[in-house]
Length: 485
Image 1 (cartoon, rainbow, N blue to C red):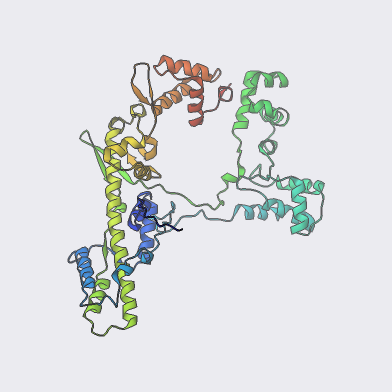
Image 2 (image 1 turned 90 degrees about the horizontal axis):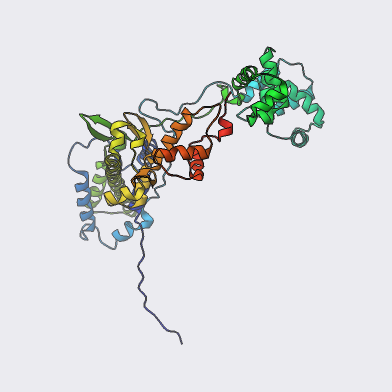
């Protein structure tokens, strides 16, 4: 026998307006401008600039009342509840584009000139090649990546030539043509690895004793060179420290990415636009929100008047009803969008203001050692918002300070306790670690264990493995690779 049960269940569901707000909050200034432009294009009921008379929201609210008046529009003609249902709300798809135009530049800038590949092909015209050699050369040039390397095996290139170009050749012929590609500019292009790239560049230089030694090091002792086994190199080539130092200096002057230096590499140029600005005025911090985050928007009065015209019309055709449904949908969407932008402005300002006061000592002095330990929850508790909201504000947004433009999320860090029992920011420890490494004797760089000992003497008792973790986060190589002659 079937039994029926009544069950109550609580569930959370974000409204379309809340979803729209969350998406807007996480956008940085440039992406927000692009999102605003998209909304203005999609919703003709939304206008920019100042509204000369009245409050558009009041008028819109009055229009809602007129629609609810059953005498004006019968419930059998237009069902307002269905009209305002979730299905009728436009899909607010957020298009994040960090390369949008700024106030001065209205188009996305690109580097001009011929492409890197075409630059290389043009150089091939100066060589006398038969048809097969030219096909192979052009295919090799087409296989050069943006750094200037050919990172494919010759056997794979031989197979591709046969299948795609109908050119049946041998690895020896490809190797011969590759030698021609190695003669192209910039020097080192077409190399199959860093060692070959450096060797090509050195072989094209005037052969002085320093260059010859450098070339021998790259060709015959590349592994020892990369591991900085300088004593082994001096012994192997029977040179003194000064001679080795001059040879290494020649190697350091080479370009490990010959393709990256070519101006014809067409790539998009990114511009960072600060979302906030902090200034020091008479010893106090002053926070401002980038004006481009606060556009002047209002609901179109023309669309509002269309609703009034429908209400006053005696004869209401089906096409008029369909049109007024579209109009009211766009008006509601415009009102929601304007409200979301106002909430976005308020959320951004309140959150950044809390961060600014939390890190007041840093913003007044610019000393990173003054940064206090701060996690997302600290700010969320202070402004009574969710941690996810604070995370959205901090993500991909920048603040212009007297000490340069900073990424907001960089102000967040974990804490540890020093030898005096005080909580200090891990950023402070990393800054001290960075300073110690910069001041070390490069001939005898400090090991992680030695660095841990120095930090302990400065009042930061941290383990060697923690020093190694911080060093890697700072992109500082191990002691052996920091060694210099």
